[in-house]
Amino acid sequence: MNIPTENHIQAVRKALMKWHDTYTRDMPWKDTKDPYLIWLSEIILQQTRVAQGRPYYVTISERYPTVDDLASADEDELLKLWQGLGYYSRARNLHSAAKAIVMEHNGIFPQDYESIISLKGVGRYTAAAIASFAYGLPYAVVDGNVKRVIARLMAIEDPIDDRAIEKRIDQLAQAFLDKSDPGTFNQAIMDLGSTVCTPRNPLCDECPIQERCVAHEKGIAYLIPVKGKKVAKSKVFMHYFVLSDETRILMNKRGNDGIWKGLYEPFLDEYDKSRPLTHSRVTSKVEEILGLKPISIKREGPIKHVLTHRQIMAYFYFINVPENDLSGRDGVYSMRELQALPLPRLIEKSFRSQGIL
Ligand code: SF4
Image (cartoon, rainbow, N blue to C red):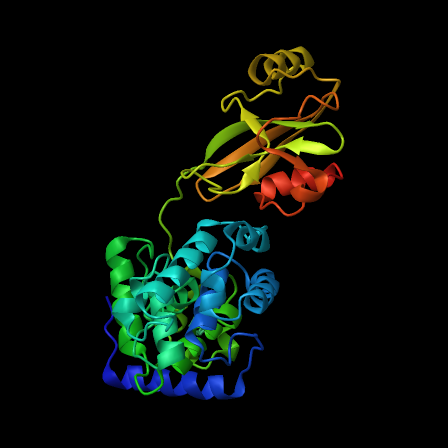
């Protein structure tokens, strides 16, 4: 594997910092040094495109402008604001880390890497981003963009998701980091990856480090990064019974494990049937399990919903029941209350298509 010389490192640093001087990408979190806002933006942007994350950042930072505000937030309200972003554990971790900052650090955001990385939901990438952007500490950020740039810069032809190669890329990123201004350098290399050294068709002719890029020199930039084999997603079938009496609806809050923890969903049954349930099967199930008699049943689906490790195929059965039959049950919400409940994207999509939301 290639090892960069000191000359190579210096030349890359210089070219990248110069390029970044003239390059600006307007983002609401870019000019702040407030560690809380940097943390919030980095967590929102994990697994999320900038265009999608931006309005969430604006809304959540306005609703909770300080770590104290976030610590005292109502969890249902925070999850509702997060609705549509996915990976809800990010919001729950933000909430509990904010509480820990208030309880254990007197509401002052931790200022060293070790304390930052010990916050719930903060990994090496986020800790390096906060440490370098807010405090100018010399930690290289290594996200997907940076991995790609480094892999091409050093012509790494091994799979970049291999543990040993990941470690090597971390070391190289740290070696290239400009320790005199780590925040700007980190921003520059990430920006280069997202705008110039893009996954497909990198714009090498516009690249400030073209002359120092080994993959470009060898004519193999388009072959890098190499990725290991993808694991096939497992398929899961879900059957949702949406019970309502026109003005009220039955919803459950999901428990403390599995996906969509703390979010609300209709009654869920049958994980393994790939075919839709017949009208009479739905009727007998509703009577048997819930003790309710359907007036009408309308089916929707299957709706495909893709998560990181699995693909969900969901059927929805919209079931009307007589007006008083929902009275006295737990989990009955008015249609107005439903609007404020945090819902998984899949449920939101289906409810919107039926005009329930
Ligand atoms: Fe990426 Fe091309 Fe620049 Fe190399 S020269 S870093 S491949 S954009």
